[in-house]
Image (cartoon, each protein chain N blue to C red):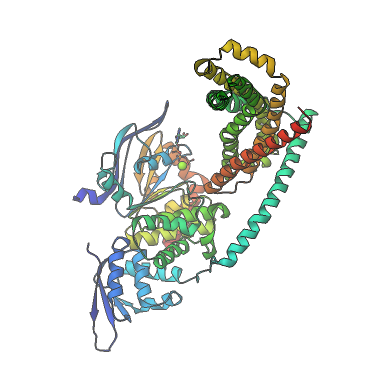
Length: 265
Length: 374
Ligand SMILES: Nc1ncnc2c1ncn2[C@@H]1O[C@H](COP(=O)(O)OP(=O)(O)OP(=O)(O)O)[C@@H](O)[C@H]1O
Ligand SMILES: [Mg+2]
């Protein structure tokens, strides 16, 4: 690995995605740096989830390249691919938990598949992840269908964290969480990022999350990334969608909360 | 980064200090665990000044080295010289991992086996009761449609007629053609010794008109469409689509069950008829090619010996079988709960039940026809 690779963990160049006649992405460029939390925002249907799927290789792009940890996954050998895949954790928008396994088993699946660890340690680790994402201990033995929507979301994050990944892909983790839970989640991201040197690719609509835990924000409008900048500076970007988003009532209150908090600190 | 190394340090005050160096992460955990097992003593302090990398799994292993889960929180003070970010992580892990004692899960024992056996037995009775209840519900809904209080969804009916009926024609006719040929061969082999090969005609035509045509098509439809009904309705159920239907003030029976039932009621007799024809054609072909019974002779003999009402006796069973297959398929689908595994289990159960009941009812019909001297 060379130096540039170390600084940029994910690099997307000239990405285009199409579904039939519908063009979702066109000439999309994006870089994610090591150790940062990058938020991707954009309207519903702007193609955020599709972008995430193209980065992790679930969606074959029509054009363009995606490098993750310096490797082009599409041309890489399957063993290289697998070793990269082991270094990321993904939480899908609707959880995508295995419906016939309990929450505990769901979290143990990646551990069992990738590492040979003693069973009691795996149990304890899985329960640690459950506690980390703020699920009650008795949720461990429940099936996904027996959980509430927000609990399913948390269980999905716990499974994404199972292998202590370097890169975390989260698709709208705080939607469906109560405000306290969402705030707790932002805190968790900050702690994990600091201690695990975690890089987070975060798709979100939550302006509070953006101001509390994100280093940079990428705005996905009109089929490509129109701007990438820090939360404070992006709100001054002249693009009409960004203006409408950040200067609306929700944007202003979130920003005000941030300034208050920094003043206190 | 290298795997974590463990070295003892002996400070003056007699503490057992263990220095951890290198990377203490998930990836290196198996190596680290073997090293920990090789330790002779339990350390009272950990020195993390030379630790390069730590993740939550590594932090947990270090805490386990020091104490039991209930005491993780107090154990953090016995970790020295950790970098601030490592210290923060260890504290987070100690707080969360030690927070809740492990809830106990029931272990299976012979007692549980007995309980399971009992539950399974009483489950069969409950199941039969439930099936009878569902037949009633469906009939009630059907009656409301006949009396015009509810609508029959024609588009859906036609769609299912195509999928359960029309699409099944090739497989049903091919299968019955082959079985017809086999029956002809078998009976000819047995009857040749008596010089009565010509009786093959009656055997093939009577068996297909009265039994095989309808039975084979019902079994095929149970495997093809009954399972599809369960899987479709079941996955709708597990994605809360059935709840959505109810919440929209619609009736899942009217919307999902009745169209499938009506489609099968119409199409199974048609399929059975096609099955009878294919079976007889199979017999005719074998007769012509291997037994010196020309097609004309076959048909003349059939006209002389086989009664037309045999056809009606066979076709009469088709709606009954259709009702069984559709109701069981839909009921099993509606019983699915949550998981993908549950969809699979109910689909299996649906096919097994419908084939079983089809054969049971076929036997009942045979007894009935015999008693009525038909
Ligand atoms: N498998 C697919 N087949 C066809 N079109 C698709 C497919 N997946 C996504 N799309 C289309 O691509 C567009 C972008 O979808 P995407 O799921 O990325 O939106 P999003 O930005 O994540 O929205 P949201 O914030 O609501 O989750 C949408 O118009 C969607 O209809
Ligand atoms: Mg999305």
